[in-house]
Amino acid sequence: MAQEQEIQHEEKKKPNRVIPIILGIIIIAGLIFGVKEYIYSTKHEDTDDAQIDADISPVVARVGGYVDSIFFEDNQHVDKGQVLVKIDDRDYRVKLEQAQAAQQGAGASIGVGESQIYSTAANAASAKAQVTSAAARLEKMQKDYARYANLVKDGSITQQQFDQSKSDLEVARANYQAALDQYKAAQQQVGTTRKQLKVTNTGVNQRQADVDFAKLQLSYTTIKAPASGITSKKSVQLGQLVQAGQTLFSVVNDNSLYVTANFKETQLEHLRNGQKVKIEVDAFPDLDIEGAVYNFSPATGARFSLLPPDNATGNFVKVVQRVPVKIKINGNKETLDKLRAGMSVNVSVSIKD
Image 1: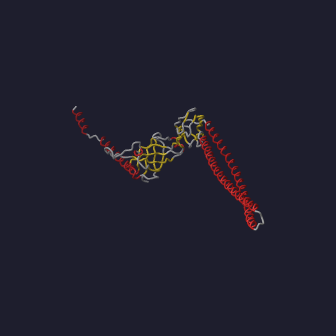
Image 2 (image 1 turned 120 degrees about the vertical axis):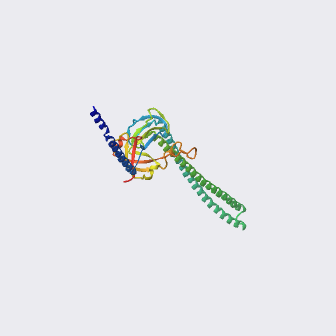
Image 3 (image 1 turned 90 degrees about the horizontal axis):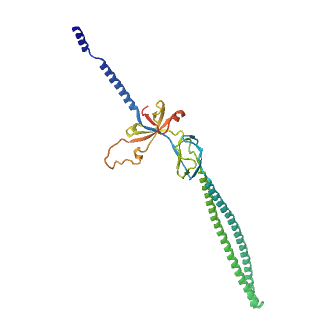
């Protein structure tokens, strides 16, 4: 019994070396981890405040009407220029026909105006000929009167003949003045008709503009895909009455994916365009995706918010702001097809090669 107690006492005195060894291993591992993290932090800038974005084209109705046909489904891939929605175009076709009829009427009035110009020009030519004829007769009467004035003095002719010559001269003068006035009036009429034709031409141009506008409105009844991509947020049904300016659906453009990473303002010192980026997608952690810094937002995200902060009012509390940074994604089609706008990602920018 005494021997057993002595053995137990000696075992108690033996030091326990396992715990120091474990603590030592933990300390060494912590040091190694800390050094690695420090070295990594000197060469990289990371953030988990990032998501995938894409160019999204909203499709808006440019004219109102009832939806006649729909040629796509939600989340379907479409090609640029593909017809997706057709609005009942009967009202717009009638408006086009009305505009074309008005254009034809205006065109016919041009022909009438040109005929009037030809007619008034002919009248002016005739009046000019009458002026020439009246001038010749007046010149003859003036010569006859001068000759008779000399003859009446020596009694070669009677006073009655002289008076007749004088009367003929006055008639010739009156006829010449009347012909001259008619010629001036005819010329003015030609000018007035030309001005009326210009006004008519202006009306024809207006009618042509009305036709072009009617054709444009008619073309808007056929709604096409603005870009190649996948349709989303479809909010249009057959028979629905849509209004001009109403959003019908959206198209997420092909090959337009990129990452928006919101870095702290204190991280921007070493960030530059073109730096390599490693992207980890939360939904696909096994995907190996790389990218490159493309550009930087001109303002912080808070500055673009609905109610941007104003540090000049109230109590000021300094908060580290974040600046959106656009990152291009480099990847094959198979990889990009898995990604969706809005997915959360982690990004790591290599700031030192």
